[in-house]
Length: 150
Length: 108
Image (tube, rainbow over all chains, first blue to last red; front, side):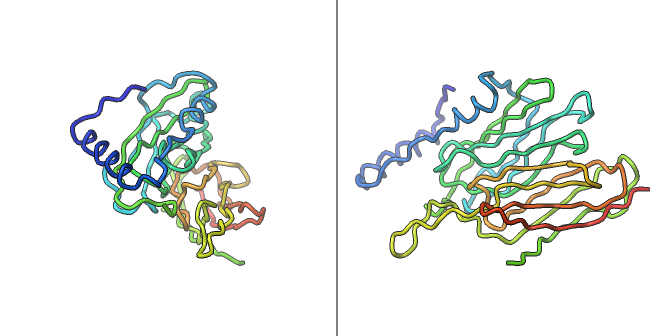
């Protein structure tokens, strides 16, 4: 995925570089295997944008507990329903956040939990439908104090 | 360790086809395995990795938690009321132990 940085993001990117230079001994945060996790989940298919709604705060003051709601547009009948939703975060020490498993008995494909985010990053949700199609949504969360004991 | 989860249904009595919301909170450290103690030793991972909810014996919702789920995991989800029965919520720990909570839904 190519990303175009806006002015504010470029500033933080620059600040990050300065920070890394100042604390040279500290290893730079490497991207984790979020992309591979999505590929594995989607079985090589590219998920389409849409249908999935990811509700997260713009700015999380405490990365240890960030409320997250995922909902997917679906009639949730035996004929058409959401089976699984994978949530990953691309700058955490490990990419996996949570996987929700729905059934037609869920009635509504919506779940809420609280997650840990180590740094400012994108959270990505990928939904798998019972017909084998995939949909995704992502949202950037700015984290003031990181979770994961970092 | 006897942990008692806190479970709340938004309605205990529902009409058939109603959507019932479940909120549940369980006390657990959710240790990531990334942290180190004062002596520099890694604190071993200990999380609840699996959550399942059944209503009248039928699974309605499940979730696999990873280390990125906060301590004292909170979960909120919905299910469609179809029959009267117990709503059983089960969390499975890394060590195989389980935490179980139960409520009852009455469907008219």
